[in-house]
Amino acid sequence: SSSSSSSSKVVKNRSDVTPDDVLYISPYSHVPFDGTVTSDPKDCYVDESIVTGESTPVAKVKGSKVIGGSVNQAKGWNMVVEADCASYVERIIKSVQEAQLNRAPIELYADRISSIFAPTIIAIAALTFLVWLSTGHTVFMSFLRSISVVVVACPCALGLATPTAVMVGCGVGAKEGLLIRGGAVLEAAQKATCVVFDKTGTLTLGSLAVTASYTPAPLPEATLAFLRGLFPSTVALQPSALAHLLAATAEQGSEHPVAKAIVQTLPKRPHAPPLPTCDDFKVFPGQGVSCNIGGRAVRVGKASWLNFQGKCMAAVELDGSVIGCFNVHDEVRPGVPAVVADLQARGVQVYICTGDESEAAARVANECGIKSHNVFTGVMPDEKGEVVANLQREGEQVVFVGDGINDAVALTKANVGIGVGGGTSIAIESADVVLMRDGDLNGVVATLDLAKVVFDRIRLNFLWATMYNFVSLPIASGILYPWTGWMLPPAFAGLAMACSSVTVVCSSLLLKTYRRPASSGGADQVVGARPEFKEKKLKRGHTEELGLLEAGRMSDSGSDELEMTALQV
Image (cartoon, rainbow, N blue to C red; front, side):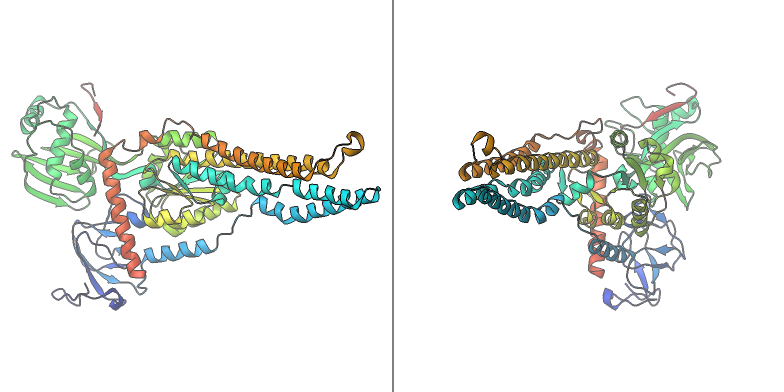
């Protein structure tokens, strides 16, 4: 909508929107252009993960910049369109197209051999004819020797060495959940020296969740009695679980991402009644919420707002005393540390490149076993491509792994781009390899391993073809005749040539016995490890894809002292 005043709204086509137009962004709609917020929304958040990769929606106030393609959350607001009506997403798509045009094809070794093989064989055949003729043999005998040389020479074995191995290797990769786009990709992958991972949605699940809750001190019996009366349950609940239920009750009316995480990851209470209601609910933007529950004052929010000195993302207070603390994070995918360890054991450097803040990235890097100096934070999508280019200038063969439109430029510029299944369409289109099993990061290890196995087989095929020609050509030319009186007839030369080609094909077919390397972080442990989070991830991916399509249309303690409970959701 374009608005010239707060009371009148006119629906306009995108092509009719001009710079400085004021648009109204309704709740849960896509932001169509880059611009600036002109109204003063309260408790307003925008999901910019399609561009920055950061899973936590960003708070917006009057004067805040917004990015075209991002998704508004629960509150509507006005924005003014920037002078350039092209959105940030459109500029990313343009950068991807330019990067694809600038990629140089990889020259295969077989092509270089083929350019000199045929004239060399013709020269050897002519030389054979002249030598036999000059030593007193008949023209027919000399011609027969030269024919044997031409027939026994096997460019087929050399020509089949690469394509047969690549074809079988790509087929084996597909059976292992790896969609590999050609032999050039395998050639680049087997030379990889470093792997750069996007963080949000790639190394992590892409959804905020309460990863742990605890009580900072033993709760008084009166407090426990109040909480147990408020939240009846057929199973015994720990004090931290009771505090979690109290926080969720207070946060039911909040749109804040942390509040939603607290509500969505409730402790299990079989056959329990729904959460009670709260009274006098108030929101304090950027701090937390307050309300009355069961006649008692409750506040939930930042630890600093509650004057609590502990280190946690959120806490719940009852009548002025903090009774529960929560760690809320975007969780690392199960099996990722094992994948990182496998890569490092192969001598491959592992990096993180993310648009997220340094603290969140450092936590993920620590959990995954990635060195702190290998973490790039606050990186915008076009800057990710520069990170890849800088590593390449340092002599690295770079593999980039990502899942979002914000990774598209880096996926295209990397020597090998690996797209994670369930990611956005543009990320998958930009990638050289697609992991078809959503969340199966062990596929990165399998890609590098398969590439090495395939190219070892290609080298073996070349060795066999070269040795065959090296041995068979002298025999066909009659080098044994002075000592043995034996010559290779043209018919047997043709049989030998056919056998050499069949041998190369059979050698390539042996690749069908390949199995991906075993890992404690295998696919079965990653996919479906957290069904509810996988469902959210797919929904998020679907939302991102809708955003991309929209952009495309636009542009084209256990003890008494301390109890710590890791939540099993």
